[in-house]
Length: 353
Image (cartoon, rainbow, N blue to C red):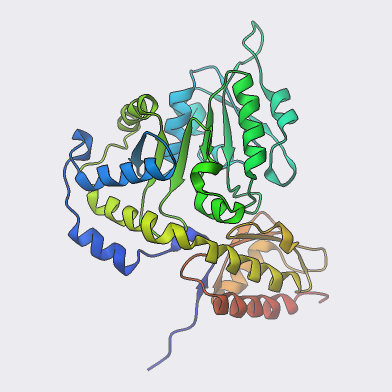
């Protein structure tokens, strides 16, 4: 019998499989019609999510993108602008939804390391005049995916929120991986998100649930968000079978994501020693590792990703010279050591060739 080839999947923490406890909870879930508010398992998940983030209410949505876009729709009106960092998920990976669904325009601000500066944010905000598009919302992202999982620290979060409030603007936090950011910052997720009007976080990334995200905020905002969810096609019925996995994600998986951050830092240390790779491990805050291929690498990022896949290491190429690797509960310290050695071997065949 042929042994199975080892594979380490570092493309994303979305590739995680539900845990045994999740599958058992899903099988045993008590369900009802969620659109009528009658699914007890969904109601429990929403109550736990709101309490975890220190808010009054929450709504369960199919995806992080839907959660972000519901928030944008609730906080804006057509013909206004949304200000956020240029690499933000809401600008780059949500299919132009803010324009298509809410009639709003993005105003991206490029920031070093993906962390906005308060002065730059203040300059980007447009008042209501007769000749400019007014700013209606500030979106922050923590941790910041395209910035390599960087964390905006609590003090900077407070400064940015203060700028928005000084201009009378609401703040939405794309906290898809807020628990990884919380572990890195050493503060509870509720503290990291304090002052934001709405917060979205994902259950289906490092928390290993099969699907779903939560949008939290005050009762009035979430009441309107629930209406918009239905309008966007996100009304779900006996969805307690999914919410049950979400409860396990919050109760059992969220407290352990610091382990994934540590595994990512170990991976970064190993990769930084490989010729052809440009990477500063000190920039790896959470479970995401980005590296670029230098001029001597002799291969493109897509080419390297394809060759690594052949030897059992799955990674995500971003552009011609950048690679992303993401750790999660199914990836151990030994796995990243094995993966880094495969990178060394494959890249070694190209460097200086």
